[in-house]
Amino acid sequence: MDLYKEKIKKLYDETASLIVRLSFEGKLSSEEMRFLLNLLDFVILKRGNFEIVSTLKKWISKYDGSETDEIIKATLLAVDFNNSDSIRFNMELIRELLEVKG
Amino acid sequence: MNLKLREELREDLMFDLESERRVLSSMLHSEDACIEAYSLLSTSDFYSPKHAAVFELIISLFEREIHPTYVEMLKEAHSLGLLTNPQDIEELKYIAEHYIDDENIKYWIKKVKDKSKLRKFEAFLRKNYQVLGEQQEIDVEQTLMAAEEELTNLTALEIDDWIDTPEDMANLGYNEVERRFLRFKEIKEKHKGVIPLDGLPTGFDNLNHITLGYKPGDLIILGAQTGHGKTAFALHTAKAIAVDNKKNILYLNTEMSREQIALRWGSILSGIEHDRIRSGDINETELSIIVNGYSRLRESGFYSYPCPNLTPEKTISIARKFKAQKDIQMMIVDYIGRMDKLDMRLQEWQILEQIVKAQKMLAQNLKIAVMCLVQLNPDGTLQGAKRMKNECDLMLKLSPISREELEENEELKKYLNPNYYIFIEKNRDGRSGVRIPVNFDLQKQTMKDAERVAI
Image (tube, rainbow over all chains, first blue to last red; front, side, top):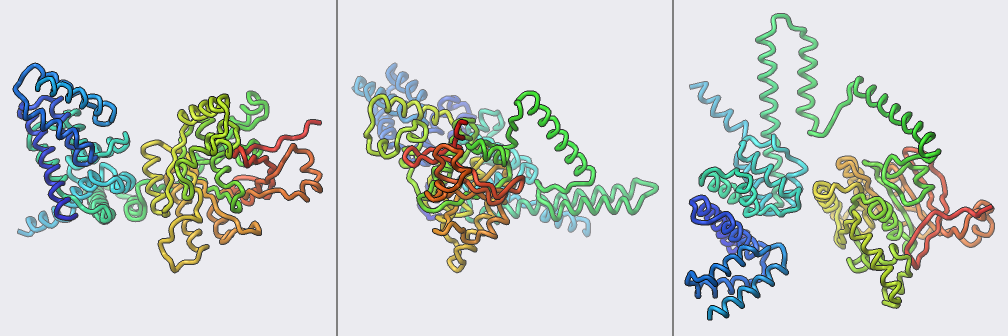
């Protein structure tokens, strides 16, 4: 395994373990843990659409704990990462909600 | 001091946790490693109970067609309540970190397997030592013979191997005769003389009657010249098994693309000429007939794997995967002459012989029927035919009936439009040397028994 792949693998293992550990410590709910694990597999192993990552970054930069943020979070948790239609539909919804936030 | 040394030695000898971790880690990263470990190891081969639990978890994901990544394993372990403290997560991570390239998987599997055998050997020694200590009077001959049998099983045999005792053989024989006796009675009473099949339907009534179907463990070889219906025969078989009888089969094609195979099905299931479907020259009624045909295919058990660079090793790995995940009853390899040569020094017939041997072993190990399609020479002979014939259970040849024969052969005049023969060159379980006249519609890619002329 080359150095780059080795680093990515280490990052993947560490991140996955961290997510489950945080759930253990009660800092993440089961749904949040599942979402983050699925996102990790989707981005690193399935090399899925990186648009989802840029949308998430945009959301984090605008996050203020408002009601819209709660709706965005609920929308994210409902994403089925095995269904491309579900990803597309929910990302579109989140982008619209982010526009509403301004 | 001596005792301590022995304990240390034993600890080192009886298990190898690193090999166990490497096998598990490789299974998390590579499907090929999963297939290998799935077929060669069992839970009891792992010394560490935690490793055994992880192995079971990975296998359960694999069987459900979920790619067993580290994340999937964590999710599964979490939902089953197997993660009880943060230390469990660290242990799983430690396993995942022991990654190896999957080319080395067989080496690590062997190490795990060897240790497992060694532990069984130790248990054998302990048990026999106990027998010596506990019994007052010992039948030496009997004790030694029992020990020898157990030891033979440990050294010579794999998990699935089996030696029949005289009692086993007698029971098996009686059960088989009884089954056939009851079936014969049933045929006479219920089916009015029509013999039910022992295996999978062939798609031809006459061939069914002679062979009683393709049975688990059977290797069937079908030979035909180029352009004389090898693929049509394979898909006709697939239709009989997967579409008409909803049994799962795996079809490996080395020549055709996914689109070509899919288009052929359109023709086979609708009865509309293949050329017209290919060019799109069909009307709306025909389109709806074709759609109807594809909906039958959708509900069937037909799994297709187009693979231009197929090797014997790859067929084994794919068949194992589909047996585990889809419980396939049959695999069709279309065709073996197109398989990649791994050793360029070998002659063509030697390679074909090796491939055929590998397929026969595969059929027996997985208890599925395997059909291999081979190409006949222009004179209707087969290269390496004798050796292939030795290996297979059923050898069929598909060949056109010449115009002269159609005009001169009185027997053929009893049939409506026969244009091909299926010649049974070898049949381990029944009659051979039989020619079955069939009708092959090249345009519609369909085959059927040639109908008898009504008198």
